[in-house]
Image (cartoon, rainbow, N blue to C red; front, side, top):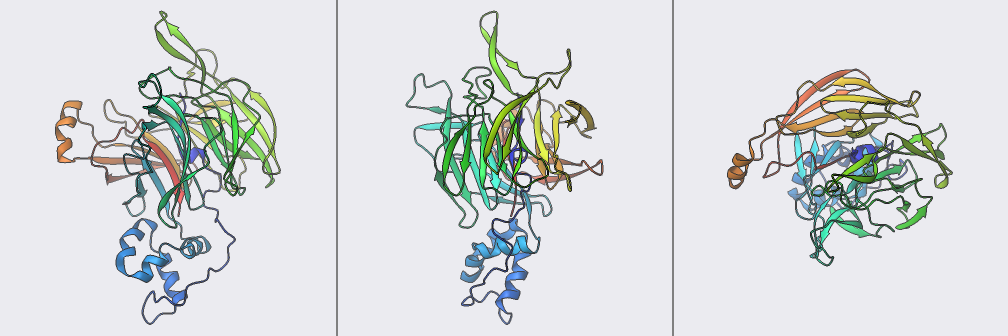
Length: 429
């Protein structure tokens, strides 16, 4: 099964400004810092890392208004003072609050829970993707009390957006086809999101659930989903990314790996049939779609078929992104010219016993996240009422410099999270 973080699904220019780079107008009726012109005071405040904004908002009314304004984000883009943040969804975002993590200041910032539906619960395998100052949560797999049987997962079509201007969630138009564990990408500079494949995959039911091959395009400005040419065959658990071809209005939408039909062992246990290949759609004029072409097998006979967690890193001055896979404690890089996965590096420190790594791309680096230590399940249950969340250990790899570094941070969650099922995404603010 391919597991893809939203960094791999985000557009290749995640830090592109949401508006043209013009000097924003500052409300002159406010006094931001006494005895300083407001434009100078605004510039000073814009240099404060985003993770600290929540603490500064209650200082006074003028600061609360400024730190919630579009002028702030415009200033940060204009002067390139953006904070590269990781957003972690520990579980169902309508139950557990997601957190933003700033690796430079080792600061955490909580986000409010997503609006909940009293009839559904256990949302997982959703996709989170950032576009400008917005964070989107798309689809997923969940349990619905109105369906029968209620112990089987159902795909979701819901779409929510978190607005960092007013720090609130808002519902958007639902996808045409409900789906979880699907490929997703935001097209650069076009305000459009593409989704492909998916199904009703759920962590509690290994190969049970549906698979689909439909493809859709979301127009952010119109809040509208439009059907596109479907995949050549059903594909779920796949990852998607965009590859430019040197022009601003065209490129390719890649959908890689995943699984299709399932078979049973002894006629009882369902097992996924994993794909070895990828499919590619050429895009023109920002949204005009072409036909799908198939890319051959990436694995030779006898080699691994089931792919690990994949992220995509934009490479400076190159139109071809870096595609990386975490396979155990090894990092592999996909070579498009040979259509093969090649060894890139090895994670210096292995994950604790019976644990796993989180994998996300941030500011052209690879972040490998795990708990510093993992207690056994009995100890974990006993210590929950003490709210011992533990410590997160982050190992960071720079693909261009070929070097590793690490950092340690106290987890903001009041319980040990399951990193294997948590959703990681990156955003610039």
